[in-house]
Length: 115
Image (cartoon, rainbow, N blue to C red; front, side):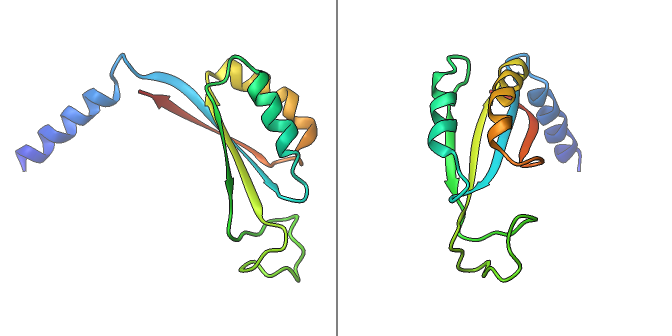
């Protein structure tokens, strides 16, 4: 049992490492047909403050904007997630620009640390 406690204590010291940098991860949830993916990626690329971005294509999904008759297992309008991260200030500045292109409540932020 003491070995487990010491491992936990060691992990907590690593978790508080001064090398960790606070960041904010942003996920933008859209569908392919509504996607302004090219415009959003162009804007993200132009921002010299962001560290990068990735677009994920979902194989299925549903949400408040999905028609009830839609087959979630075989979507005709696949879901996409655009993800990027950086400092809180850089992320907030970027969100201001893309917010007008995205439906309300489709931008999610997550606080994290980069190492």
